[in-house]
Length: 420
Image (cartoon, rainbow, N blue to C red; front, side, top):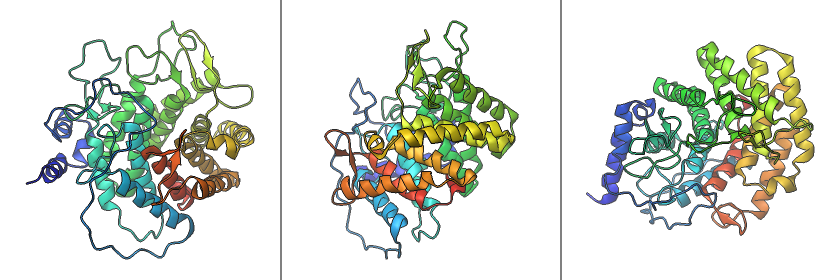
């Protein structure tokens, strides 16, 4: 048995769905993916630009007949196939990185896969790819941050580490925003396949998010979610708190648990009270002493637009929809294509998804039109041979970028009811 075959067998043995239930047994299964010493550098950190690694050539196989697709669905499929061929490790459900990708880009590859599965009449079976994404996700699962000194983490609840968990990878910090992105996709996957362990995993992440709420009265503007569960983390962010509200609202819709709605209202109002600017857009984060970082990012606006829209749907309170529309109008005026192109495509992908979700309720067309213009530009100016997309300075192909462009094309090809 070759090393690749052995790795594949061990991954398969984890069990795609059971491993997501965040139980000790699931964690042990996920950690048994590879018993060899970790090849990670000792000081691995989050990075936007992933290293360009060479993927082993795959055996030539007979190509399946391509579906007769045109327009956005065809381009979505080309981008998705390029992502799989360029970044997925041969014989493994994981993607290249150091040696594996961080959870952040992995979460977006998961999002791209779920989005593709929601395109009507795609003509390509994606059940195997969905299964692989779930099996790969189990490799990031950590139930207690075991092996780290006591006091390093503020929370040891089961959730997904920012890097592949021990013993295969170094594990470490759990990022609240990354876990938001993962759980939102688990909810979408549950809606596709109706498998209870997937919903249970999303609810486990929700418990991690809710336990992270910052209640210390010594904080300026108490409340909000920090960037990570590191004990030295001091910021509370829009990007952690607003997507957690969206997750809570999706779970409330599925379960009827009133605690989720209560948390969503609390999280949404905290962002408005502590980070809303006079221009109806949202700052990035606030420090313990009350210093606000006023930088405007598109994904922060998008997450609050989406949270407001979902709160309106859950409560029928028109104030939420009014607030979402005001932020959408301000964002559309501010985030020109030039500004959006200066951000990593992951940010606009989140922005467009939420803006188009609002449009599905209010029937305003700017969201889809702007998203279409964005990917048209990317197709013409940011695409390499092999349908790889680039971003950054200098421009380089990255898993995070490829997954984001795939998502936008996929969203433009899908009904809005599948966005969340």
